[in-house]
Amino acid sequence: MSALKASEAAAAARIVVPVALAERSYDILIGRHQLCEAAGMIAALSPGARAAIVTDENLATLHAPALETCLHQAGVATTRLIIPPGEASKSYARFIELCDGLLAAKIERNDLVIALGGGVVGDLSGFAASVLRRGVRLVQIPTSLLAQVDSSVGGKTGINSSHGKNLIGAFHQPALVICDTALLDTLSEREFKAGYAEVVKYGLIDDAAFFDWCEVNWRRVMAGGPERDHAVATACRAKAAVVARDEREDGDRALLNLGHTFAHALERLTRYDSTRLVHGEAVAIGLCLAFRFSQRLGLCPGQDAGRVAAHLTAVGLPTRLQDVPGGTGTAAEIVEAMTQDKKVKRGALTFILAHGIGRSFIAPGVTAETVGDFIESELAGT
Image (cartoon, rainbow, N blue to C red; front, side, top):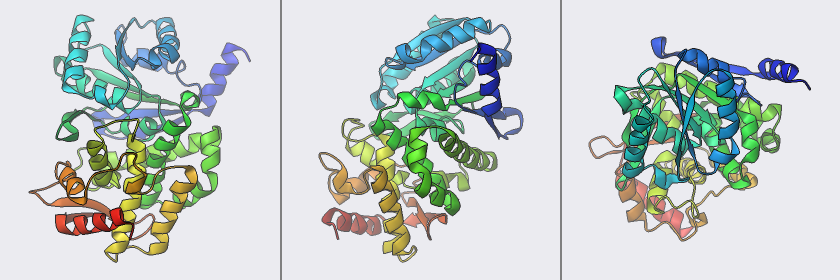
Protein backbone atom coordinates (compact mmCIF):
# COMPACT_ATOMS: atom_id res chain seq x y z
CA MET A 1 0.00 0.00 0.00
CA SER A 2 1.34 3.44 -0.93
CA ALA A 3 1.93 6.05 1.74
CA LEU A 4 -0.97 8.11 0.37
CA LYS A 5 -3.37 5.17 0.45
CA ALA A 6 -2.21 4.22 3.94
CA SER A 7 -2.88 7.78 5.08
CA GLU A 8 -6.33 7.74 3.50
CA ALA A 9 -7.11 4.38 5.10
CA ALA A 10 -6.05 5.61 8.53
CA ALA A 11 -8.18 8.73 8.16
CA ALA A 12 -11.20 6.72 7.02
CA ALA A 13 -10.92 4.33 9.97
CA ARG A 14 -10.45 7.11 12.53
CA ILE A 15 -13.08 7.48 15.24
CA VAL A 16 -13.38 10.99 16.68
CA VAL A 17 -14.84 11.43 20.16
CA PRO A 18 -15.36 15.08 21.21
CA VAL A 19 -15.00 16.21 24.80
CA ALA A 20 -17.35 19.18 25.15
CA LEU A 21 -15.91 21.67 27.64
CA ALA A 22 -16.65 25.05 26.01
CA GLU A 23 -13.34 26.84 25.38
CA ARG A 24 -11.43 23.81 26.72
CA SER A 25 -13.07 21.34 24.32
CA TYR A 26 -10.88 18.85 22.48
CA ASP A 27 -11.06 15.68 20.40
CA ILE A 28 -9.98 12.11 21.09
CA LEU A 29 -8.74 10.44 17.90
CA ILE A 30 -9.04 6.64 17.94
CA GLY A 31 -7.86 4.04 15.44
CA ARG A 32 -4.90 2.06 14.21
CA HIS A 33 -1.86 3.88 12.84
CA GLN A 34 -2.99 7.35 13.91
CA LEU A 35 0.38 8.42 15.35
CA CYS A 36 1.87 10.02 12.26
CA GLU A 37 -1.51 11.01 10.82
CA ALA A 38 -2.06 13.25 13.84
CA ALA A 39 1.25 15.10 13.46
CA GLY A 40 -0.39 17.72 11.26
CA MET A 41 -3.12 18.25 13.83
CA ILE A 42 -0.50 18.72 16.54
CA ALA A 43 1.28 21.27 14.34
CA ALA A 44 -1.99 23.12 13.80
CA LEU A 45 -2.58 23.55 17.54
CA SER A 46 0.10 26.21 17.67
CA PRO A 47 1.78 27.07 14.35
CA GLY A 48 5.51 27.55 14.81
CA ALA A 49 5.52 26.01 18.29
CA ARG A 50 8.13 23.57 19.56
CA ALA A 51 7.21 20.32 21.29
CA ALA A 52 8.76 18.53 24.24
CA ILE A 53 8.07 14.80 24.06
CA VAL A 54 8.01 13.24 27.52
CA THR A 55 8.32 9.47 27.46
CA ASP A 56 9.87 6.62 29.44
CA GLU A 57 13.00 4.60 28.85
CA ASN A 58 11.15 1.77 27.08
CA LEU A 59 9.11 3.92 24.70
CA ALA A 60 12.07 6.18 23.90
CA THR A 61 13.29 3.51 21.50
CA LEU A 62 9.94 1.89 20.69
CA HIS A 63 7.68 4.76 19.55
CA ALA A 64 9.39 8.12 20.12
CA PRO A 65 11.60 8.07 16.98
CA ALA A 66 8.58 7.56 14.65
CA LEU A 67 6.66 10.37 16.35
CA GLU A 68 9.64 12.72 16.11
CA THR A 69 10.08 11.96 12.41
CA CYS A 70 6.41 12.69 11.68
CA LEU A 71 6.46 15.90 13.72
CA HIS A 72 9.60 17.12 11.95
CA GLN A 73 7.91 16.43 8.60
CA ALA A 74 4.99 18.55 9.83
CA GLY A 75 7.38 21.37 10.71
CA VAL A 76 7.46 20.88 14.49
CA ALA A 77 10.83 21.00 16.21
CA THR A 78 11.10 18.58 19.13
CA THR A 79 13.10 17.79 22.21
CA ARG A 80 12.86 14.57 24.17
CA LEU A 81 12.78 14.08 27.94
CA ILE A 82 12.97 10.57 29.35
CA ILE A 83 11.80 9.28 32.74
CA PRO A 84 12.21 5.82 34.28
CA PRO A 85 9.21 3.52 33.74
CA GLY A 86 6.93 2.58 36.60
CA GLU A 87 4.71 4.12 39.26
CA ALA A 88 7.74 5.25 41.29
CA SER A 89 8.27 8.04 38.73
CA LYS A 90 5.11 9.78 39.95
CA SER A 91 7.12 11.40 42.73
CA TYR A 92 8.14 14.85 43.92
CA ALA A 93 11.70 14.21 42.76
CA ARG A 94 10.73 13.25 39.18
CA PHE A 95 8.23 16.10 39.00
CA ILE A 96 10.91 18.67 39.89
CA GLU A 97 13.37 17.02 37.52
CA LEU A 98 10.86 17.11 34.66
CA CYS A 99 9.91 20.75 35.25
CA ASP A 100 13.59 21.74 35.28
CA GLY A 101 14.16 19.72 32.10
CA LEU A 102 11.30 21.49 30.32
CA LEU A 103 12.65 24.88 31.40
CA ALA A 104 16.16 23.93 30.30
CA ALA A 105 14.69 23.00 26.91
CA LYS A 106 13.20 26.52 26.79
CA ILE A 107 9.64 25.33 26.40
CA GLU A 108 7.55 28.49 26.30
CA ARG A 109 3.87 29.13 26.99
CA ASN A 110 2.94 28.78 23.32
CA ASP A 111 4.81 25.50 22.98
CA LEU A 112 3.51 21.98 23.59
CA VAL A 113 4.19 19.17 26.02
CA ILE A 114 3.46 15.78 24.45
CA ALA A 115 2.97 12.86 26.85
CA LEU A 116 3.93 9.68 24.99
CA GLY A 117 3.37 6.78 27.33
CA GLY A 118 1.07 5.10 29.79
CA GLY A 119 -0.70 6.55 32.79
CA VAL A 120 2.50 7.37 34.68
CA VAL A 121 3.91 9.45 31.81
CA GLY A 122 0.55 11.12 31.21
CA ASP A 123 -0.11 12.00 34.85
CA LEU A 124 3.40 13.31 35.49
CA SER A 125 3.67 15.22 32.19
CA GLY A 126 0.20 16.68 32.61
CA PHE A 127 0.97 17.96 36.09
CA ALA A 128 4.22 19.51 34.88
CA ALA A 129 2.40 21.13 31.93
CA SER A 130 -0.25 22.52 34.28
CA VAL A 131 2.26 24.52 36.32
CA LEU A 132 5.07 25.22 33.84
CA ARG A 133 4.98 28.97 33.14
CA ARG A 134 1.50 28.79 34.74
CA GLY A 135 0.24 26.41 32.09
CA VAL A 136 1.31 25.15 28.65
CA ARG A 137 -0.70 23.08 26.20
CA LEU A 138 -0.67 19.32 26.57
CA VAL A 139 -1.13 16.55 24.01
CA GLN A 140 -1.79 13.07 25.33
CA ILE A 141 -0.61 10.11 23.24
CA PRO A 142 -1.42 7.15 25.51
CA THR A 143 0.41 3.93 24.68
CA SER A 144 -1.33 1.58 27.14
CA LEU A 145 -4.93 0.40 27.07
CA LEU A 146 -5.47 1.72 30.59
CA ALA A 147 -4.28 5.19 29.61
CA GLN A 148 -6.27 5.23 26.36
CA VAL A 149 -9.59 4.53 28.08
CA ASP A 150 -9.02 6.36 31.34
CA SER A 151 -6.11 8.51 32.47
CA SER A 152 -5.47 10.40 29.20
CA VAL A 153 -9.03 11.76 29.10
CA GLY A 154 -10.55 14.26 31.50
CA GLY A 155 -7.66 16.42 32.64
CA LYS A 156 -6.71 14.74 35.91
CA THR A 157 -2.97 14.97 36.48
CA GLY A 158 -0.79 14.33 39.49
CA ILE A 159 1.82 12.49 41.47
CA ASN A 160 1.77 10.18 44.46
CA SER A 161 2.64 10.83 48.09
CA SER A 162 3.67 8.49 50.88
CA HIS A 163 0.14 9.18 52.14
CA GLY A 164 -1.56 7.85 49.01
CA LYS A 165 -2.01 7.81 45.25
CA ASN A 166 -2.60 10.94 43.14
CA LEU A 167 -2.97 13.20 46.17
CA ILE A 168 -0.91 16.04 44.65
CA GLY A 169 -2.04 17.32 41.25
CA ALA A 170 -4.23 19.60 39.19
CA PHE A 171 -6.97 19.53 36.57
CA HIS A 172 -5.36 20.38 33.21
CA GLN A 173 -7.29 19.41 30.10
CA PRO A 174 -5.28 18.28 27.07
CA ALA A 175 -5.61 20.05 23.75
CA LEU A 176 -5.74 16.75 21.88
CA VAL A 177 -5.72 13.00 22.69
CA ILE A 178 -4.43 10.50 20.15
CA CYS A 179 -5.33 6.85 20.85
CA ASP A 180 -3.39 4.85 18.27
CA THR A 181 -4.67 1.36 19.02
CA ALA A 182 -1.86 -0.22 16.99
CA LEU A 183 0.54 0.91 19.71
CA LEU A 184 -1.18 -1.55 22.04
CA ASP A 185 0.24 -4.43 19.98
CA THR A 186 3.54 -3.94 21.81
CA LEU A 187 2.06 -4.31 25.30
CA SER A 188 2.75 -7.38 27.37
CA GLU A 189 -0.21 -9.67 27.98
CA ARG A 190 -0.20 -8.66 31.64
CA GLU A 191 -0.34 -4.92 30.89
CA PHE A 192 -3.09 -5.34 28.31
CA LYS A 193 -5.23 -7.39 30.67
CA ALA A 194 -4.67 -4.84 33.43
CA GLY A 195 -5.95 -2.08 31.14
CA TYR A 196 -8.96 -4.18 30.24
CA ALA A 197 -10.23 -3.83 33.83
CA GLU A 198 -10.78 -0.12 33.13
CA VAL A 199 -12.68 -1.00 29.94
CA VAL A 200 -15.07 -3.32 31.79
CA LYS A 201 -15.60 -0.64 34.44
CA TYR A 202 -17.67 1.48 32.04
CA GLY A 203 -20.12 -1.36 31.52
CA LEU A 204 -20.42 -1.90 35.25
CA ILE A 205 -21.10 1.78 35.96
CA ASP A 206 -24.11 2.42 33.72
CA ASP A 207 -23.98 0.36 30.53
CA ALA A 208 -25.05 -3.24 31.14
CA ALA A 209 -25.26 -3.85 27.38
CA PHE A 210 -21.57 -3.00 27.02
CA PHE A 211 -20.69 -5.45 29.80
CA ASP A 212 -22.68 -8.10 27.92
CA TRP A 213 -20.69 -7.21 24.78
CA CYS A 214 -17.41 -7.52 26.70
CA GLU A 215 -18.32 -10.99 27.93
CA VAL A 216 -18.74 -12.10 24.31
CA ASN A 217 -15.95 -10.12 22.61
CA TRP A 218 -13.07 -9.77 25.09
CA ARG A 219 -10.82 -12.19 23.20
CA ARG A 220 -11.27 -10.14 20.01
CA VAL A 221 -10.46 -6.95 21.93
CA MET A 222 -7.17 -8.52 22.97
CA ALA A 223 -6.45 -9.74 19.45
CA GLY A 224 -6.87 -6.27 17.91
CA GLY A 225 -8.96 -5.13 14.99
CA PRO A 226 -12.36 -3.43 15.00
CA GLU A 227 -13.45 -4.86 18.37
CA ARG A 228 -10.49 -3.22 20.07
CA ASP A 229 -11.26 0.13 18.48
CA HIS A 230 -14.93 -0.24 19.43
CA ALA A 231 -14.06 -0.97 23.06
CA VAL A 232 -11.70 2.02 23.31
CA ALA A 233 -14.20 4.33 21.61
CA THR A 234 -17.09 3.17 23.83
CA ALA A 235 -15.05 3.75 26.96
CA CYS A 236 -13.85 7.16 25.75
CA ARG A 237 -17.40 8.25 24.84
CA ALA A 238 -18.60 7.25 28.29
CA LYS A 239 -15.84 9.14 30.03
CA ALA A 240 -16.17 12.18 27.73
CA ALA A 241 -19.88 12.42 28.56
CA VAL A 242 -19.22 12.29 32.31
CA VAL A 243 -16.37 14.82 32.12
CA ALA A 244 -18.54 17.21 30.09
CA ARG A 245 -21.19 17.10 32.84
CA ASP A 246 -18.80 17.22 35.79
CA GLU A 247 -15.30 18.38 34.88
CA ARG A 248 -13.90 18.70 38.41
CA GLU A 249 -15.61 15.74 40.11
CA ASP A 250 -18.17 17.71 42.05
CA GLY A 251 -20.91 15.20 41.20
CA ASP A 252 -21.36 12.03 39.18
CA ARG A 253 -17.80 11.97 37.81
CA ALA A 254 -17.03 10.18 41.08
CA LEU A 255 -18.76 7.14 39.53
CA LEU A 256 -15.63 6.65 37.42
CA ASN A 257 -13.91 5.64 40.65
CA LEU A 258 -15.87 2.38 40.87
CA GLY A 259 -13.50 -0.09 42.54
CA HIS A 260 -10.80 2.52 43.01
CA THR A 261 -11.14 3.15 46.75
CA PHE A 262 -10.16 -0.47 47.31
CA ALA A 263 -7.62 -0.39 44.45
CA HIS A 264 -5.70 2.68 45.64
CA ALA A 265 -5.47 1.24 49.15
CA LEU A 266 -3.99 -1.98 47.78
CA GLU A 267 -1.48 -0.07 45.65
CA ARG A 268 -0.37 1.93 48.67
CA LEU A 269 0.02 -1.18 50.81
CA THR A 270 2.10 -2.91 48.13
CA ARG A 271 4.22 0.26 47.90
CA TYR A 272 3.40 0.71 44.21
CA ASP A 273 5.56 -2.32 43.45
CA SER A 274 4.58 -3.33 39.91
CA THR A 275 6.13 -6.77 40.33
CA ARG A 276 3.36 -7.46 42.84
CA LEU A 277 0.46 -5.39 41.56
CA VAL A 278 -0.16 -2.92 38.75
CA HIS A 279 -2.99 -0.39 38.75
CA GLY A 280 -5.36 -2.31 36.49
CA GLU A 281 -4.95 -5.48 38.53
CA ALA A 282 -5.78 -3.50 41.67
CA VAL A 283 -8.85 -2.11 39.88
CA ALA A 284 -9.96 -5.63 38.92
CA ILE A 285 -9.84 -6.69 42.57
CA GLY A 286 -11.50 -3.41 43.55
CA LEU A 287 -14.38 -3.93 41.11
CA CYS A 288 -15.06 -7.38 42.51
CA LEU A 289 -14.81 -6.10 46.09
CA ALA A 290 -17.22 -3.24 45.32
CA PHE A 291 -19.81 -5.68 43.97
CA ARG A 292 -19.33 -8.19 46.79
CA PHE A 293 -19.53 -5.35 49.33
CA SER A 294 -22.76 -4.21 47.66
CA GLN A 295 -24.04 -7.79 47.84
CA ARG A 296 -23.14 -8.03 51.54
CA LEU A 297 -25.07 -4.81 52.22
CA GLY A 298 -28.13 -6.24 50.47
CA LEU A 299 -27.88 -3.82 47.57
CA CYS A 300 -26.81 -6.08 44.71
CA PRO A 301 -27.86 -9.57 43.58
CA GLY A 302 -25.26 -12.24 44.23
CA GLN A 303 -25.51 -13.42 40.62
CA ASP A 304 -24.32 -10.00 39.38
CA ALA A 305 -21.36 -9.99 41.76
CA GLY A 306 -20.59 -13.51 40.57
CA ARG A 307 -20.74 -12.50 36.90
CA VAL A 308 -18.25 -9.70 37.46
CA ALA A 309 -15.77 -12.00 39.18
CA ALA A 310 -16.31 -14.80 36.65
CA HIS A 311 -15.64 -12.51 33.68
CA LEU A 312 -12.48 -10.98 35.14
CA THR A 313 -11.25 -14.45 36.14
CA ALA A 314 -11.83 -15.69 32.59
CA VAL A 315 -9.76 -12.80 31.27
CA GLY A 316 -6.95 -13.76 33.66
CA LEU A 317 -7.21 -10.92 36.19
CA PRO A 318 -7.05 -11.17 39.99
CA THR A 319 -10.37 -10.89 41.80
CA ARG A 320 -9.60 -11.42 45.51
CA LEU A 321 -7.27 -10.00 48.15
CA GLN A 322 -5.58 -13.38 48.33
CA ASP A 323 -4.48 -12.96 44.70
CA VAL A 324 -2.00 -10.19 45.62
CA PRO A 325 1.54 -11.65 45.86
CA GLY A 326 2.96 -11.13 49.32
CA GLY A 327 -0.44 -10.31 50.80
CA THR A 328 -2.21 -7.03 51.51
CA GLY A 329 -1.95 -6.62 55.27
CA THR A 330 -4.73 -6.73 57.82
CA ALA A 331 -8.24 -5.38 57.48
CA ALA A 332 -7.30 -2.49 59.78
CA GLU A 333 -4.33 -1.62 57.56
CA ILE A 334 -6.49 -1.67 54.43
CA VAL A 335 -9.11 0.58 56.03
CA GLU A 336 -6.39 2.95 57.26
CA ALA A 337 -4.99 3.17 53.71
CA MET A 338 -8.46 4.10 52.50
CA THR A 339 -8.71 7.09 54.83
CA GLN A 340 -6.37 9.09 52.55
CA ASP A 341 -8.62 8.51 49.54
CA LYS A 342 -9.56 11.76 47.74
CA LYS A 343 -13.26 10.93 48.19
CA VAL A 344 -13.06 11.01 51.99
CA LYS A 345 -15.18 13.91 53.32
CA ARG A 346 -14.83 15.02 56.94
CA GLY A 347 -13.41 11.64 57.81
CA ALA A 348 -16.27 9.60 56.28
CA LEU A 349 -15.56 7.12 53.49
CA THR A 350 -17.36 7.45 50.17
CA PHE A 351 -17.69 4.33 48.04
CA ILE A 352 -19.07 3.67 44.60
CA LEU A 353 -21.43 0.74 45.08
CA ALA A 354 -23.92 -1.01 42.80
CA HIS A 355 -27.52 -2.16 42.68
CA GLY A 356 -26.41 -4.46 39.87
CA ILE A 357 -24.39 -4.51 36.66
CA GLY A 358 -24.80 -1.12 34.98
CA ARG A 359 -26.42 0.40 38.07
CA SER A 360 -23.67 1.98 40.15
CA PHE A 361 -24.19 4.85 42.57
CA ILE A 362 -22.31 7.09 44.99
CA ALA A 363 -22.59 5.93 48.62
CA PRO A 364 -21.29 8.56 51.05
CA GLY A 365 -20.82 8.09 54.77
CA VAL A 366 -19.85 4.41 54.83
CA THR A 367 -18.42 3.66 58.26
CA ALA A 368 -14.93 2.29 58.69
CA GLU A 369 -16.39 -0.44 60.93
CA THR A 370 -18.70 -1.67 58.16
CA VAL A 371 -15.88 -1.76 55.62
CA GLY A 372 -13.53 -3.39 58.12
CA ASP A 373 -16.00 -6.19 58.85
CA PHE A 374 -16.41 -6.83 55.12
CA ILE A 375 -12.65 -6.94 54.53
CA GLU A 376 -12.19 -9.29 57.50
CA SER A 377 -14.63 -11.69 55.86
CA GLU A 378 -12.84 -11.36 52.50
CA LEU A 379 -9.47 -12.11 54.06
CA ALA A 380 -10.99 -15.11 55.81
CA GLY A 381 -12.50 -16.31 52.56
CA THR A 382 -16.05 -16.37 53.94
